[in-house]
Image (cartoon, rainbow, N blue to C red):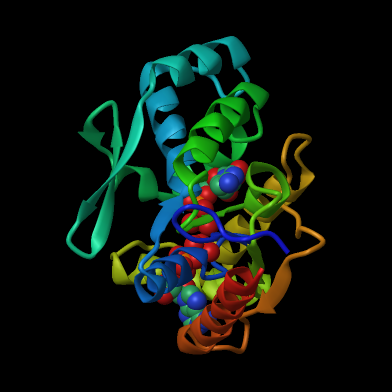
Length: 233
Ligand SMILES: Nc1ncnc2c1ncn2[C@@H]1O[C@H](COP(=O)(O)OP(=O)(O)O)[C@@H](O)[C@H]1O
Ligand SMILES: Nc1ccn([C@@H]2O[C@H](COP(=O)(O)OP(=O)(O)O)[C@@H](O)[C@H]2O)c(=O)n1
């Protein structure tokens, strides 16, 4: 097994919406002293900027030009991380369900995937990093030292999203929220470029009946074991 990279290993966390990727990535990064990259936020930033510019979700030339001119950066803000698109803080605006669905459509387009792939590889190459998304273990870093595929039943993932929306005062029903989760799964799994799927060498974790803490323990132990192997190798 290869020795670890300059700053540590690369950890890939892939899985469908609501599986717990963002929550676990942040907690695991803190435990390990690693940086974390929310690649979904990058696709969401492209979707938001495309909507503002009036670019249709199937206009590949328009999307390619938008990506060429778009600079996406993450800046730490205490315990959280802000997402900047050309210097503007879009962290809150990119989180709506509407942008989530649009993101799922534009992230299927080849020029968008190519542009973000280059950025993500540059951000993660030195290691000491956790990337979460849909295609990290299969496409972005197929050579990541540790890969997790985090899932949960669609009903449970929909229920988690519904609780989040209700806490924000959103009037969406549980049934509608589960239906949107299933719609996004279909779009992400069925697309031609970098579809959502488990890498062969990923450790699958079904969080349907596990607490966040239980998932965190499995992940942390797995990474630490890998680091011990790397130190020996
Ligand atoms: N194992 C779990 N048990 C209960 N709730 C969870 C679990 N994992 C995540 N959650 C909650 O589900 C919601 C979605 O989690 P999130 O980390 O945003 O998922 P993802 O990034 O995969 O879409 C959050 O409110 C989070 O607190
Ligand atoms: N590596 C990634 C990350 C996200 N995405 C897309 O971006 C959308 C939003 O991703 P996200 O991780 O913010 O979504 P949630 O899991 O937070 O709902 C997904 O539905 C995917 O279509 C992707 O295609 N590839």
